[in-house]
View (cartoon, rainbow, N blue to C red):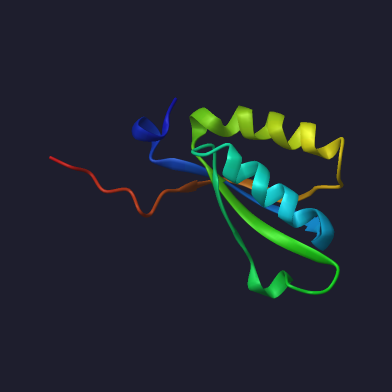
Length: 93
C-alpha cells in the first residue's frame, strides 16, 4: 500500500539527547523525501529533544531500518508509533 491509496501517514515521536539531535536531523535531511520532522517545543530542555516524525506507508520500513542503524551510534527512544489520517491530503479531479 502507498500513501496515494491509503491517505495515511506513520507518525512517530522520537526522543534523543540534545547532543545527538543535530546528527539525527542531518541524517534525515540527507535522506531527502524519506520523512519529514519537527522538534516539539515542549521537549527543548537541556538534556533531550523530542522529534515528531512523519512518513508514508511505502517509506515506513526504510525509516525503521535507518533508525535501527542509528541506534548503533546513539540512544533513540520511540515514545509512540502510530498510523494517522493525512489531514493535508487534497484530492484532485
